[in-house]
Image (tube, rainbow, N blue to C red; front, side, top):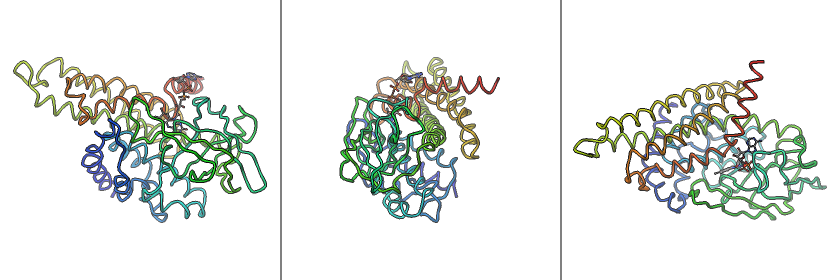
Length: 373
Ligand SMILES: Cc1cc2nc3c(=O)[nH]c(=O)nc-3n(C[C@H](O)[C@H](O)[C@H](O)COP(=O)(O)OP(=O)(O)OC[C@H]3O[C@@H](n4cnc5c(N)ncnc54)[C@H](O)[C@@H]3O)c2cc1C
């Protein structure tokens, strides 16, 4: 059954997403109908239990589906999985929130996001300045979140806020926030790297009032919990980078067989072939690290080291191999109909999401030293 699902995802990625994505890299945004099609396939509920309206698959299928989707467009895949993650979290926290929001999330009518980053802090998560103040009816939130996937259009967010003094990681809690509530103002963040399919944006929270039950993770638990959850995200981002390199290899292979230069196909030129094979070998190596991390996350084992290593390996592979493969395409590779330029931009963004590469390199060094001592 999971094979049939992945075949459907591949068909959707190639037939629908890739075809539309060319326009997203030059400013257009995905049509709502495409999210509804993705929802109908079950992409917004891959790991959501069947009795809650999802597909009930495990993490390995989530990673595999995202790899295929990212081969068509990283941003669209990221947008879907960020909504998926909130749906999954609601199933874990309780019936009321799940009953209220799951139908909209799973059908693609509502986008959702996870908001940690702020204009003043990213890697140093403990330094967030968004505050949650206890009031008689519950909580009041004040602050700003930035660089959030789906931030420009999401209707729902899990927002991390400080309940104690700034810098006290044990004071951070997680809240479920309706982004259509009074006091919330959303905005889009655009950059030269087109981000329309990622939906990147931010929002201001000005005296946003929440009931007591909006607190999903209490101070003392939220900081630790997000550091655990992020291992899954690092692992599927690794798989998505592999998917982008695979798509670029496929495009280059097809072009190399048909384009002639100096009287022979490109792929008959030794230098061209050597470069192509080097990219293939680099991907194979990155995949090995991803497979190990997927296995650990799927088993519920400690995946901190494996996930960090996989993300570093696959992001670095994509950042190095995508430009190399574009070079093999000549000028033709720059056309929006090919995935090279948007995948190169996405690989740079992947180097920031869910833990910046330099931070992860230090984390791996620390964890490895601890393991060896
Ligand atoms: C496209 C995109 C989507 C995103 N989506 C989300 C989202 O959905 N939700 C969310 O909450 N956030 C999101 N982010 C934010 C992302 O998590 C941050 O960009 C990331 O945490 C890095 O923070 P920063 O950009 O503030 O960089 P900084 O923390 O300012 O770091 C700048 C550079 O210095 C390096 N650096 C900083 N401190 C250290 C250190 N101690 N040791 C070694 N190197 C260091 C970093 O590695 C980085 O290279 C997104 C970002 C992007 C670009």
